[in-house]
Image (tube, rainbow, N blue to C red; front, side, top):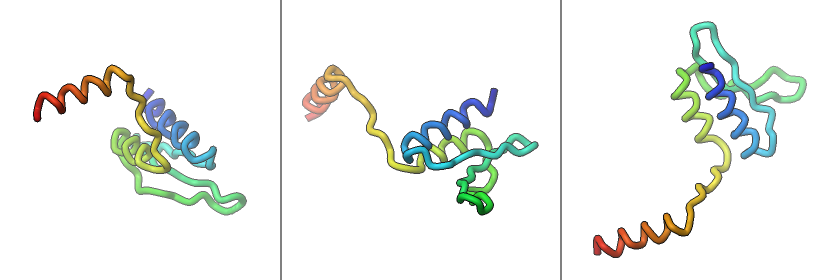
Length: 86
């Protein structure tokens, strides 16, 4: 169950990077690290083993970031808050 969060982060990274061959390695002690396949060569290890939450933050920080979707109501609310604080 713990690796589901990490594998979903890898899936999002692949989507952001046009399906680059990223994968994760789970160690026996429950830590994770990210690898990038280089064709026939050995995969490139991209980080030292990390705990789950730290690993997910690391993976989420890689690649181009997708803009967060906000509604018209959110924009109007933020504008109202800025106007009120002035």
